[in-house]
Image (tube, rainbow, N blue to C red):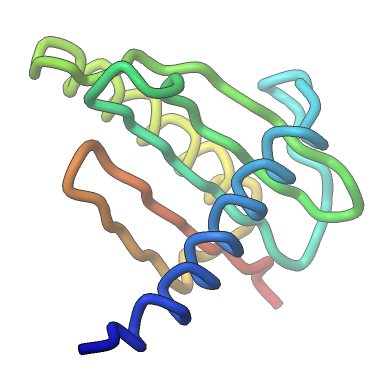
Length: 122
C-alpha cells in the first residue's frame, strides 16, 4: 500500500520550513516606538511551549522593515499573562496610529502561531 499523501505533505513541510527560515534570516530589529507608514502591517506571534526556538512577536511594515520583540517561552503557564500584555500593547500601538484589524488566524498544538493583519484606515 503506497502512501501517496506523503509526497504533498513533504512539499508543504518544505515550504513552511523555508518560509520560517527566510522570515528569521532577513528580519531586523527596529525601535519599538516607531510605526512606519504602510497600507498593511502584518504581526506574527510565535509562542513556543517546548525547547525548540524562542517566542517572539514579528511586525512587518513592508518594504524590508521589520521589528522583532522577544517574549517568554510558555513551557508552563507562568508567562501567558505577560506575553498577552505585550501582544496587546503592540496591537493597540498600531491601531492607535490609524490601522484596523482586518484578519487574524492562530494554530499550533505545541505553542501558538498567530497572524494579525492590520490595514491603514482610508
